[in-house]
Image 1 (cartoon, one colour):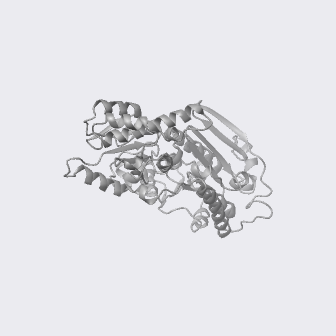
Image 2 (cartoon, one colour):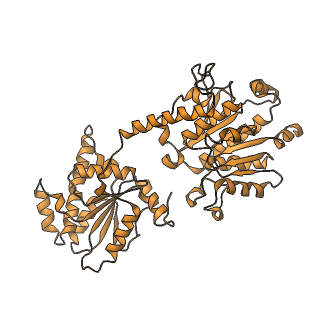
Image 3 (cartoon, helix red, strand yellow):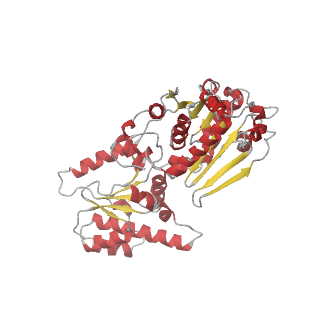
Length: 460
């Protein structure tokens, strides 16, 4: 009614993050006549547009907070908006949170979630948390010192949490939009409550709706199902909302989060692979190598093979297929070997898709172990064939010898993935199987190629 609409018109909401979730939240809050402040330090990229619908192609390279305010102003120019093109951090969190009635957590990283949680608890400002990954999404309302806070349920960040962001794990665009819609609904419900924050739970009956305090809504896009879960009571040992908290300021929060991050990094270091420097190449160095090789005045430029170790879906979405005129693409290593044997005089170079899991093999799974051994033998055979244009004799020699010297091969073997993580593991495996000094990890992968070499390269 009119009373509720007036409350919305006098409310101020801070939206942290103008990505896939924040885009939808901002649009609906602006349409409802709510004053919105948006904080985001990132810029709009073309790859964002399929899910971050508040942004336009003409806004590419524009700060996301500025872009969001431009679009909200077009939608409803009667409302005051504020763009904050900064990173939400311990330095500015309290100052930003304290001047709003509600905060929307539309971020996709755990560090920001802890900062939002702690700033809102210290400022006694409610916030609505939302997250989406793959086909799943979830939201909940946190009312300080009434609902269990983020730290109640997640006392410390975990290694798995640190990897599950939209950019790392992927998300279906409409799922992020669904989460944003649910957050906008919950925000409008909460802002129209007539009672104080501490009485918010009893205000539900007066307004004929139920707030998601002490509940979490989960959406499963694979089945189109919604689930509501009752959350446990507040953690009596919580670092910030217990009777004896260890976090009494954002300085405390920053120190504790830094220690937790150090712990995660220490744990992650056990899985980190350090390759020899001579087996690493930046995308700029790779670009320079390709330019020199392709423009070589020699009769025989150095032959090369480019291994793409991503999964099949990512390989189909974007790769170096067709990027260089002499680069022939194969989805199967065995097909590539057979073709090179049949046309041994060919001067083509090859882009071959071999997922990392195939290179890894598995000692427990005999089939995977056999597949790995077969792949290594075929790859070594291909390199020998490329090394010697006569090809057939080299293949017979390499097949009949178990002690062939891979170091004698000068064919360059480049390995690439999306961000250089899986390719690092792949090169480490190849080196352990005797592949020589001409094996190179393309650091940063396709993402770095787009950032440093070719900004028009299509990425997802």
